[in-house]
Amino acid sequence: MKLPSARIRGGRRPDRAIDQELPVVDPAVVAEASRLMWYHCIKLGADYTTPGVSGMPIEHPDWEAQYLFPSAKSLRGKSLLDIGTMNGFFAFEAENRGAHPVLAIDRDPPGFPDAREAFNLAARALHSAVVYRARSVYDLEPSDAGMFDFVLMYGVLYHLKFPLYGLYRAASVCRDVFLLETHVTLKDDHAWPMMLFYPGTELNDEPTNWWGPNSRCVDAMMEHLGFRIEERITREQNVAGLEPARYTVRCKRVRPTPPPFSENWWDATGQRSLTSA
Image 1 (cartoon, rainbow, N blue to C red):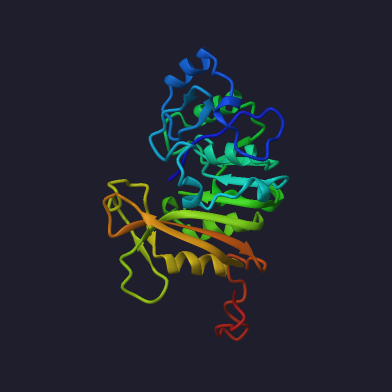
Image 2 (image 1 turned 30 degrees about the horizontal axis):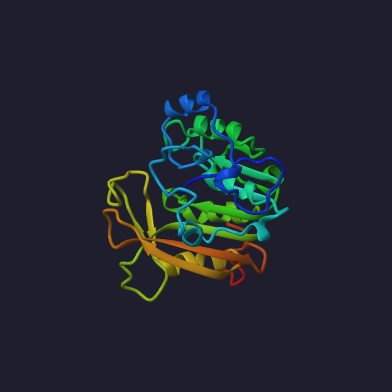
């Protein structure tokens, strides 16, 4: 899933703002925010953080490490795509650290009540230039979305019925760094990449959770897509499931992504081609 908070922009600041630099939030904004359901804990001002149901506030000392979130130095002047943005925590935080332009996408309708309305309210309160689009990860194309120096895909993979194809589409618009965070299973009885299929509510009694890859599978898919795993972190996941955990990888592009479909599977004689993708 996703995480929490952001900051006010008055020009571009390279580092996280401290509370004293944040204005007091307009009571009308607080009143409007109180009528919405929030997924993220987004800091809209010195005196108000949205009551998100998931993740941690920006002040939590571990959130950056758990998500391998890029520093202001690495993000400054870089384009960034946030896939499955929900209320926009990661997109706003990337913008605050100097990323530009920032595009945030989510499916239509989003997977959480009031997600889009909460994003829009946070964007107004933060005076943000982040662009929001209702877009499925399956629809991502360079000709439409453009190319991005950074792609964030946090808490999305295991919700996809077609996870590898979703990764293909996300990789197609990633120029340099791909950050992926997902549920994984530690029930790892084999020495090769594998995924568990959840046909019902096996993972946390949630019917939109479809897959539980092991960490080898996550690494193998990203390497197949043309990336090198630069850093990885595994952490506990306290939900009902088969040895569930959370896994984050920072990936660096080292070669082009191959086509998602094999075009030369059979040669002219009807035999399997050794050159298929």
